[in-house]
Image (cartoon, rainbow, N blue to C red):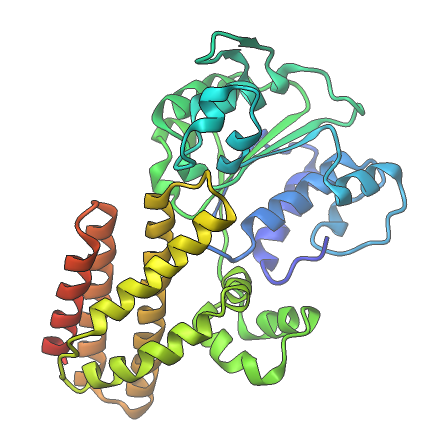
Length: 355
């Protein structure tokens, strides 16, 4: 499994593997889309394949073993990836019917820690079972910031008394949402966005046409997952729709329909998410769409700030920095469940007044 960038993080993990004193629990933290889960899966591949060596972490070696084949196909019995969407496949009707807003404790009881679930069934703890193939077990919790509070507390025992040959990896873009007691039992590894050279390598590997790369580079800001999302969801059309309005707002002009246009893109995103996954939470999908929208606004401001910096325009730099604060404030208000349209209206008004 080839990894683009993250040389420092990979060096830390290779060193831990080579030392023979690999920590039993890790938190891989960093921005959305930079490849945290990919690194976690690559680490699991090396840990579970006896033919793999630490120096192969992050590369694409031609391993021909049956274990490597199972890992690549996602059928390895000792590699467990836990995601909030897994509730749709639960034998527990209560889990299947719930909206996928979080990773609930009952899903952890089924997939990792065992115990009695809300439907009255008692589950063995997969984390404490013997490895099927005898080379250890790896549990990866994606979007670990979505673990509910009971689930985080229940996970502590497994972190405190780790089963033999078992590694837990928590992948998150918001490590601050994990309990301090979880942090104290895990090795925290911060991962950085990719540089331009690594992004170019990712574009080459994914056959992205040269003409699409400049905007994708600006939008993704070192996160190949965000670039892929932009390609899959045609986010360039959002940019083309919003950019003329933002240019007017940059000139201090209040654009009456700007907030309405932003809201329409968020609603279209939400509808597409629900159509693709009817079990998805509409509220959660709308929040994701709003984050994408705000990310696009931030990308626009970053570009303007870079231009102002190149020209040495200190006042312009300060104004753009104020806009970054306004966008961050809007994000906090949306996470506090304030009315989205009101938040967007306030953001548009503050944008025009700031510049």
